[in-house]
Amino acid sequence: MSLIHNERTKLTATYFNGAAISIFAIGGFAPVAAGFGSGLQTVTISSSLTSVVCISTSIILHLLARRVLKGLIA
Image (cartoon, rainbow, N blue to C red; front, side, top):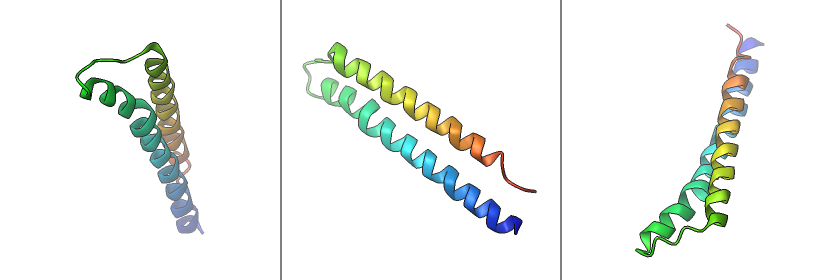
């Protein structure tokens, strides 16, 4: 039974970590990279705030994934 529990726990942690990576890439990194990639350096306060929120959400989801992994049975 503990093998099934461990695999389900790892799957849940992988899901949260995948969501964290997606949020970071799409909402945190892409707008800033697009602003600087155009050569105009037009990073507005709105896009900066959005990036900060997305990066913070990504960190929270990653930490949640780490917490889920603490539930593994030895």
